[in-house]
Image (cartoon, rainbow, N blue to C red; front, side, top):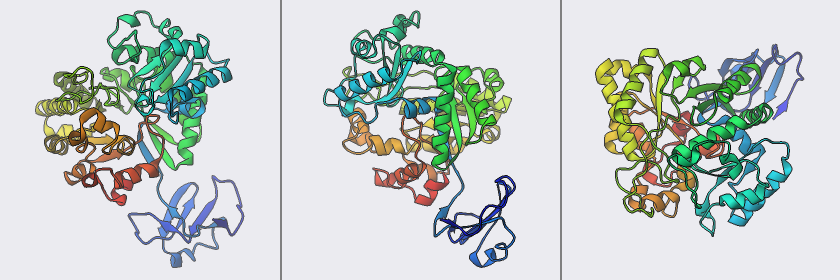
Length: 463
């Protein structure tokens, strides 16, 4: 792109004409030009009409055929954790146990001033050894320092002994394992809270800035931060909202996953929603299923349920009456069923119209049936989904097929069926689970590994 005239004044005061491109606008599907005045879009139209503005603006930009679109919204992000993955220990590219170990050792040596080491992204299912690093190995690699290292799905973690020592009683919590298995469930959430509570203000702010800068560079204008007492600290959540208000960059909309609706409101959250866990994840064998996992050592294992329909109903009623969005993390089909039953019970109490108007949302919803899709449409629920999950874990050889078997795996993430039923879709990344990558998200939905679940590129872009 080239500029035909130099800037005449500050960016805040300038009027800029952009022309010679493809301007995506519902108001004018054939637009090739636009005028931006004091940071706001003032006009969108054709190349011929743009001539009338050319002499009265401070700057003319030749787009040279480039596409101009509105900024993206990433509807599910963990901003601080994303920043740590960007600036710190990221094992997502590690191809073996030995490679992961070397990355841990190098990171610990490079960050001697950090009170706690935080890393992300290991996936032992991709390694020849088929196991994560053990606690003893991590203790040696870090020199005995506290380390919190999450699996790629962020629903389990391996940690050092020094971090466990910061969490009294953790060894008695559900999901604690002394052997080689990673921490899951309550034990995982307890060490996660301790880890993020122990980072310095400098570490936290550095990570948040890095994540927002990356989002801006990718054309993301708004991030939906999904915090909560089992995910991050209140200080982390409010600090991010303050940073986004005080510094230039993407807008941050906060969701606080707490059954305490008043607390969510007090923290400045738009909803008591986001990752309010009805279950866990498929990768960690903790998503709650109607039928057992195909690859678990316990042949009858169906995951873990964290909320029942009665609790969900009470929360939806409380949020609706408070004027806040309710929302839940639900991946397995049994968890999705519990959410549907709970929201339906709330609608019976408050009236369907009132619940629909509240625009409650459900995160992930990977395992849906025709019946639950119809219920989403009836109840006005938004499906906040992550198409990159299919790109990462779908297909006949992917993790979904390992966990569920090929037949069940083919039913996952049915975006086309959701759209046909009239269910609103909100696309996101769940970063750092998958990277911030809005155009990659569009591609993943348009080229879903299961062809009948694909949607058009235009529909994917709009979501």
